[in-house]
Image 1: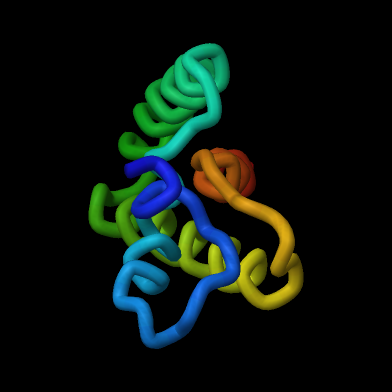
Image 2: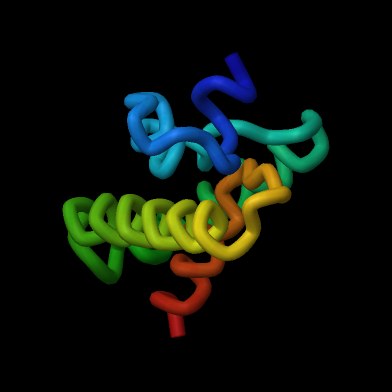
Length: 97
């Protein structure tokens, strides 16, 4: 299930899972250490940003950052598998400043 739903890689555009992966890869992680680091980052930054912005705006930021980075990885890095929510953490850090 990790490769099917939670990672972006070059696959056929006729496969419906390709489009699900553009948003779903942020829920996949390579190991527990990275998962917990990401979880702590989202919790800390998410609380700060939720006080400053509305939760709908944060949902849009999460969806746009994951879709853009997933599509860019799909187009420019065909031999790479993308996993994790680093793009969301980066968007949160940029929104905080």
